[in-house]
Image (tube, rainbow over all chains, first blue to last red; front, side):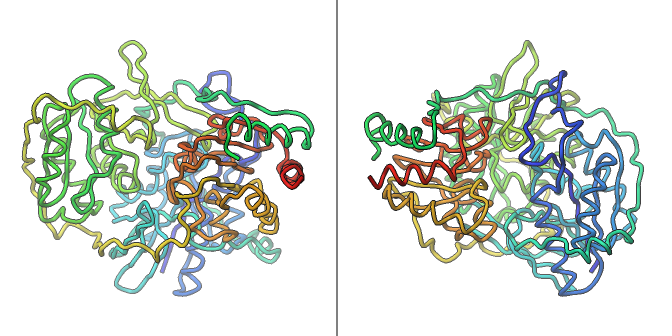
Length: 253
Length: 319
């Protein structure tokens, strides 16, 4: 089975976010970046499917030159090769534009299965995978917690809300968005990191994207909905004060 | 006209449907409600109580069980017939499964996870959280209608949905659907083995997030819970990592709770977590990051290293 995994590079969770002067994005010129965590679960699932059924795992990312970092990381974890749709504009693009860029790069790959994480840690649109399926003419299923693959197709376990689940059968080729927590992630070994250096990253230049219909007019820190009483002081003082407040003011102890 | 799309399973309306109707009504202008399924007369009657120009019913055997392909086809046909300016959905797992495909097929924008609508002159601005809820984005939309949007659970109150003085007229959608074109073959939904822990009944909850850093540190969380007479819970990443069982998870994919006291340790407060606990009476957040969104909904906050504060709390409680 030939599987493509679409991964995104996002700013690290610990990075202190500051809005740029135009209020359209964060200041990320000197930020540190990492593999979008939900996509790591999609990659892991693809590697496990390959171990079970054989085949090839191709990782694909749409983003600026720096996104090569997460492709190297995926190759070090065990992906066979990579496709990098390289464009600065894709760093802040909406899901439709990213899906279009990924679709153009994946059409000729003739894959059996496409996996993505269920959303990104930056814009969190949660749409890229499903739009990509539509553009590739594949059926899809989302928020998947288990994948059973056979010659004839897939049987996947979809997470519904409130503790409910549902099995769904799909013909191949198909696209799945993977729920975080479906598996235990592996990390790159030294051997994997060395091997990754010899693996191919194919670069693709995307077509100029159309003017997107939606845009971020302003980015800002949300207003607080509640008046939070911040308790300061040494840990011992803060702890003492908090217990007093919870006992006497909130009356919850 | 704004088309609000209802969500149902087995003839039961998802509560978020009324929140979406309320959002559509508050956006201004005419509102119609769409309901999709098979044999949904009772639901149609329930929805007709809303102040709306019509309830559009897509009733077809092919739609008896939810499938992405079935819903996309049905809604594509309803939208072609009704020509709404906007289509609103509740931001549920089901909507997330089909709405992006519908938007792609219509070649129209979809704005997900909207928490508020603002009017700036004639322009409609949709507000959505980004960067794990640490920032909000005001999103403007251009281009031809319809514009699609999904509304975060709790963004609008279900009881704020206005009821009409008489039942709204019911309109059957003319549909051409072919069972053979549905590529997803669903089996019946099921519940995983009964949850061992019902956190919704807990009076106090101590919940751990990423800030706990390692499974070995959960011991101090358990000690604090014991000293407070509380249950232990966690945000999704802790359960994903296998440090606590999935039935201890609070949030959109876990349990929804509203205890008297919710003490969040090292939880940043992504929207998926907040929707599961923001109804708690008193919320305490302990986090190193002063910008963590959990502080937006906390009553009491301590901006500090939890590994220094929790032992101090234990010492204080054990005095």
